[in-house]
Amino acid sequence: MIIVSYDISNDKLRNHFSKFLCKFGRRLQYSVFEIENSEKILNNIISEIDNNYKKRFTQEDSVIIFKLSTSCKIIRYGYAKNEESGLVIIR
Image (cartoon, rainbow, N blue to C red; front, side):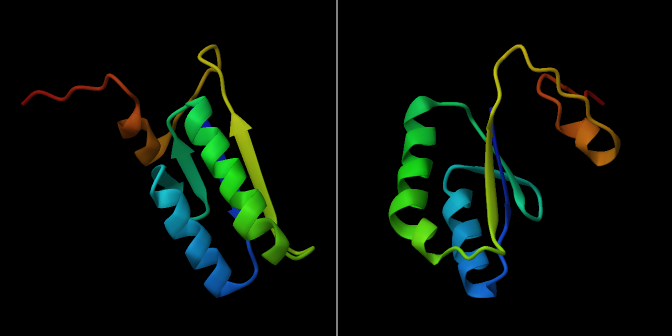
């Protein structure tokens, strides 16, 4: 799994960046995306950031990419608990 977290001060740039990330994964929180772990996808994201976003970021902006391994433990609470993989509800 890849987690991308961002804090971008410019509204237009932030919205554009958010739409870009929507192509690859799903929003966990307003500025946090979960993306399936794939070297190809990660390389595409990094390349796009380097080529199209990096020069537009200011010192106030922040983008962090976490590449998680299968050995990472994820603990979820509240609504996020419903999003655990393998959860099946039968009524």
